[in-house]
Amino acid sequence: MTDIKHEEAANEKKSLNFIEQIVEKDLQEGKNGGKVQTRFPPEPNGYLHIGHAKAICMDFGIAAEHGGICNLRFDDTNPTKEDVEYVEAIEEDIKWLGFDWANVYYASDYFQKLWDFAIELIKEGKAYIDEQTAEEIAKQKGTPTQPGIDSPYRDRPIEESLELFKKMNTGEIEEGAMVLRSKIDMANPNMHFRDPIIYRVVKHPHHRTGTTWKAYPMYDFAHGQSDFFEGVTHSLCTLEFVVHRPVYDLYIDWLKQGKDLNDNRPRQYEFNKLNLTYTLMSKRNLLLLVKEGLVNGWDDPRMPTISGFRRRGYSPESIRNFIGKIGYTTYDALNEFELLESALRDDLNARATRISAVLDPVKLIITNYPEGQVEQMEAINNPEDPEAGSHIIEFSRELWMERDDFMENAPKKYFRMTPGQDVRLKNGYIVTCTGCKKDENDVVTEVYCEYYPDSKSGMPGASRKVKGTLHWVSTAHCLPAEVRLYDRLWKVENPRDEISAIREEKGLDVVDAMKEVINPDSLKVVNNCYIEKYAAELPNLSYLQFQRIGYFNIDKDSTPEKLIFNRTVGLKDTWSKKNK
Image (cartoon, rainbow, N blue to C red; front, side, top):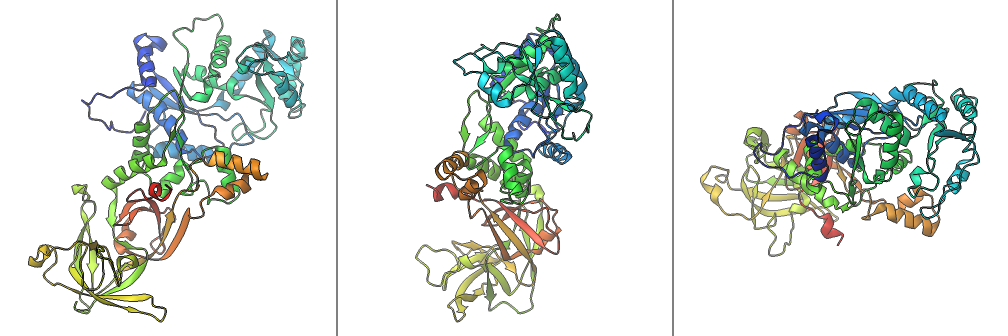
C-alpha cells in the first residue's frame, strides 16, 4: 500500500490511463475474484534509476487505487551480479518515493518449486538437456522470417535429460557445458517460442542461498511462475516484454494444466519506458561509470539513479508529478529533461527554504553605517507557504555581495550595483553606490555605498522606487561553504547513440567512448562561498533556494564544521537556450 495522500481533490474526476482502464474492466468482469495484486520485481544488480520510478508509480499506484496490494519481489536469479547492498538500496529508494510494500519476496524463495516444475516438464517431454554451445544454439534459432533448426538433443531420452539436469545442480557440470531448454516450436514466428533456455549452470555463491544451487532458472521461466505462486493478478511490464507475453502465458498453462485459469491467473500488460534526453539509464552502463570512477558512486548527483536525484535535491513529489504528467502509453517516446526540471521547480518553489548565499564574494562596505552596529532582520522562509515561518539574518556595516552584481561602468539598463545608482539590499535598506577599490591587477576588492537610514521596510523612506534588489550576507555573521555546481552529465541529447557512433567510428571501447561524451562542466566545485549561519541549523538534504541563484540542497556529507551544498537546478531553464 502507498503512504501517499491523494494529490487530486477528492471530487476531481481523474482521467484513466490505458492500464487503469484495463484493470477496471477486469474487475467489472469479475476476474481474479475482483481483487488487484501487483508486484515490483527489480533485479538486485544495481541501484534503481528514474526509469524504475515510472514502474514503481504504476505498480504501487494501481494497487492503491483499487484497494489491492503491491509486493516487492527481488528477481535474484543471477548470483554473479547481485548483492545485498543493492537489495537495501532498492528498499530505501522505494520508501523515499513514498511507497511501501505488503510483502517482500525473492525469486529464490521459489527455487525448489521451479526446480520441481522443470523436472515435471522433462518427464512430460516438454524440456530437454542441450549440450550445444551458446553460439550454436543462437545460430540454430533462425531468423524472424526463417524457421529454426531442431537441436540434435531435442529428442534426447527423458531419463537421460533427468539425470543430466540433476547433475547440473551437483557441481559435476561446468558452466556453459549444457542447458535445459523447453520444447515448444522451432518454427514459430515468435523467436521466444523456439525452445527457450530455462535453466543454466552458475557456480557463483548466491547472496541468500549460498552454494545450495548450481542450476538457476532464466527470467522468462521464473517470472510468470513467481507471479502465479504469489497470487499476482496484474503483471505490469515495459514494452520489450510484449513478445515475451505468449511464453509467460504458456508456462502458466503448463504449470497448472488441467485446471481452469481463465478468470484466475496473472495477466501481463505492457506500457512504455521512461526515456529522457541527456540521460543514459542502462544499469550496465551506470555500473561502468561507477567502476571506472567517471562519477563518484551510484548516488553521484549527476547520476539518473533515484539515490542520485535524492542527493542532488529532487523531492519525491517532483518525480511523481513528472511521471504523472508524461503518462503511460503503448509506444516509446523520448521525453525532454526540461520537463522533469520544470516539475521540480514547481515543487521546490512551494517547499524550499529561502536562504542568502554568496558564491563569488566581493566585500560591500556601507560607509555611513555605524561601526559595530548589528541589526536583526526577519527573513521569510518561503513566501509561498505562510506556515513556513521566518528566521533571523544579521545586518552590519560590512557585507558580502556577488561580484557579478557590481559593474563600474554599466550600460543603461543595468539595475544592480553601479556608482550613482540606488538598489535595495533584500530584507534591509536601500543603498546608493559611491565607488569601489581595486588591486594592482585592476580587480575590484571592495565596493562602497551609503544607506538611507529611513529606507528599511516599514519606514517612510522604504517607498523610494528602485529597480534592483540584491542579496547579501554579513561578513561577521556568515559561514564559509563548499558549493557544488552540478549540470548534466552528458553533453549530447542522446548519449547512447553518440557513444555507439564513436565506438564504431574510432574503434574505442565503451569507457573511452563515454569519456568523449561526458560533459566536462558537469561539476564545478566552488569553495570561496559564504552563507547565512541559519543554514547550519538545517538537517542534511533540506530543500533550499539560494535567493536569485537557484535551488540547492544540503549534501548528505555536510557537517556544521564543513557545510556542503549541491545545486539542484537553476531558477530558470538556461540549458535549452544555451544549446540551441
